[in-house]
Length: 168
Image 1 (cartoon, rainbow, N blue to C red):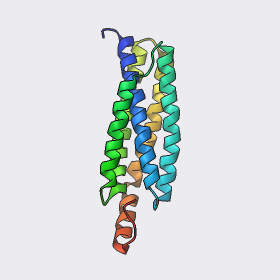
Image 2 (cartoon, one colour):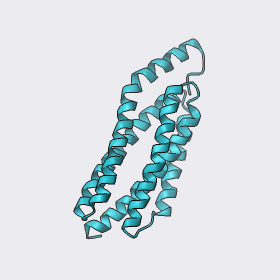
Image 3 (cartoon, helix red, strand yellow):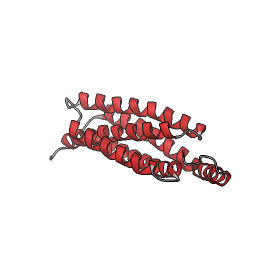
Image 4 (tube, rainbow, N blue to C red):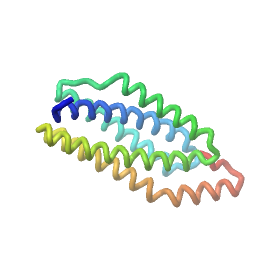
């Protein structure tokens, strides 16, 4: 790959697969947040947003005459499923999901920041704008997780001390 457009297509394919991974992670989290209704509602809302983001990335690829990579998509979903399994085995599953989610949101935001710069370099300002919108959405979810970390921790500890389901 030697030109900005080729890199942009490659990285958009990565982003499409990344959103597939996010969908798998969020679906697992939402289904496991039985005793954390506020967190569950936020995760479900972000899941819907993530579906829209994935559609937007696919549309960007289409504007460039490209399709998503099925192999990358499958690999990322597999990683998400394995991660979800490991978290489900943890006593403090809800906190592991929150930590992993926060890290993932930061990674996504940085990816879209990079994509916006690549799109501008490739002469694709519309794609850059789409990536900037998604970047802000990922930052907002990351900020929410950051702000909720103490509350989730305190709720987990209180439920654990009371001997009620704290895990999820």
